[in-house]
Image 1 (tube, rainbow, N blue to C red):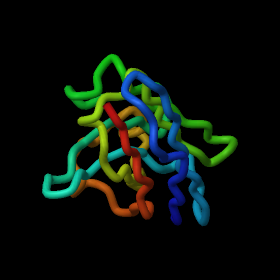
Image 2: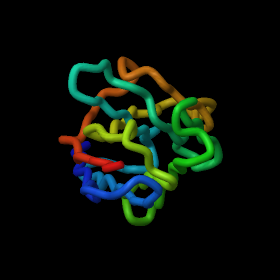
Image 3: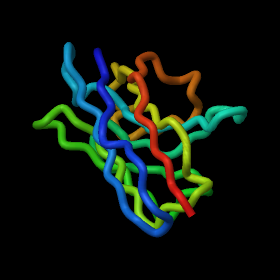
Length: 129
């Protein structure tokens, strides 16, 4: 599967932004999806994940209550709605996909980058104070 992230930009603290990640090449609904981010000089950080069934989501502690992940399987797209942005949210944001082959894993979520097989190219989000 190929992933194309978009929607990043330069915003002010307190603003909102919605990232999109369009998938192509395979059946999108068979992939668990996630967003990660990486700021210069820092390790990659888990942001949010969503199951193939669209029924389960998980957010990282630093974004909980502000960021929401969602997906539209009909549009082969996963979204990240980011509210109340802070300067510390400045980073390159990457979407990732994991193929789920077992039916019992349809509601599973993974939060380690090592669990994802496919990555988008990243979209930059810069939040000014």
